[in-house]
Length: 288
Image 1 (cartoon, one colour):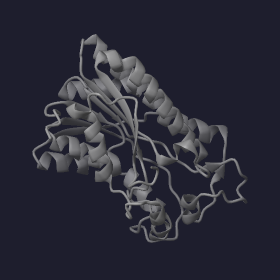
Image 2 (image 1 turned 90 degrees about the vertical axis):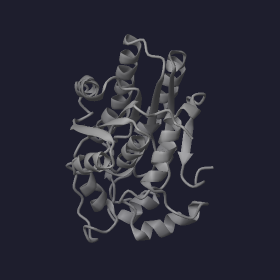
Image 3 (image 1 turned 60 degrees about the horizontal axis):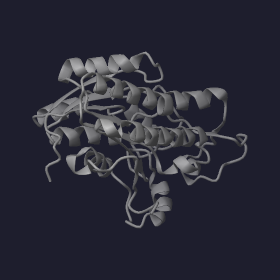
């Protein structure tokens, strides 16, 4: 399979670990030049498990790292990559992100919106536990919804993605380009996410933006699609939670970052030229 991605310029947000990092390496393996955005989280959670054990603490620790290791791995394999840190909740960073990517590698042809803000929140008061096995496994009750928790999610997961797509399109048209790919990373729980209500809702809104972009961008040679990961081990799934989740996955295992990366590369490939406005669930059959 010739993906046609050699020498394409790819911008991936939130790619210092997990799905984003695997996606960066997958594109580099196809010969693309990869510009990695990252933002180091400052969120901390008190946990009882060992720091190196799978769980929320490990996941957040990985999110607090820069993208240096990913860039080094790609370069060591003969690929092209560099990184830049910025906070996508600030709209002013969007244009600068593209400027830096294009100053390094040239016009961005593939945009992968993987970065996301997350914190648990709920309509319920803290003394009532929501019916969500993910939250229950963390042994900490989610916070009640506030205007601040709502806005922190939508600033990155919805507005940030929309502004990135708009900036991508503006630059695409200005250079009279005819080929482009946008892949936005959502979640299986976007339709309903008790205990993580703002996260799920912000992703659902992002999915709606993506379908509208697919309609408006199609005649300009751009496809826009969504990948919705199932339970993917990026460091946050504890052994206890894994045992609770596995019966819901027909394939019988958790996803890996590479599983998602391969699906994203597929949607960016020449072979996916007639696929747009679609949501691809990548979860071992858990949402079939």
